Length: 208
Picture 1 (cartoon, rainbow, N blue to C red):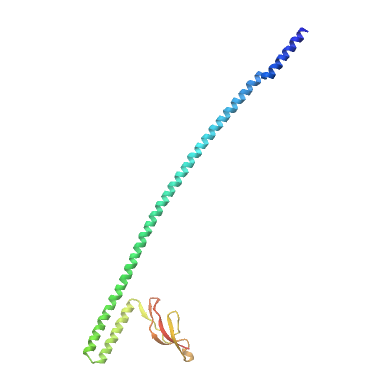
Picture 2 (cartoon, rainbow, N blue to C red):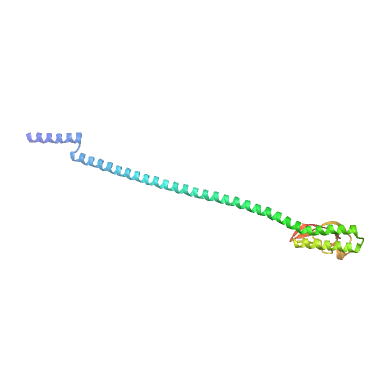
């Protein structure tokens, strides 16, 4: 009986320890698990911090690269704009010079004709030779026509040709035979071409 009592007390004591503190060896294992979990969490946080730091450095590098590219393109744009402005001013000046020079050349070509006209007027005041005066006027006309030709200006030869509204203006129509229908029968005002462009439209009479 005495042994049984001792055994029962030992069992109760063991159950009491189990209910109050649990298994001593189990508690130690639990503490170890908690320590391991904490260590893993710390390591994970360290890795996350390192990753965040790398991401921040990468983002900063990208931002700097973009800023440098923007600055480079801005500089190129400003240089290109300045070059274009200089080119525009230069071409405008060249165009103005060309217009002025072209006008000057035409006027210089007309001056000899003007001299001939003045001489003809002076001759008419002193001479009664109509034939000589007529020949002189014809020479002036030929000289003037040649001066125009040298500048690329030529007369339109339209008489008895098909009427072309792109180079001539019909100011009148006249009843004619079938062979002249739609053709120029008379030139009221001579037309002129400058190269392949119309300098002045001709005014003509068209047959119908």
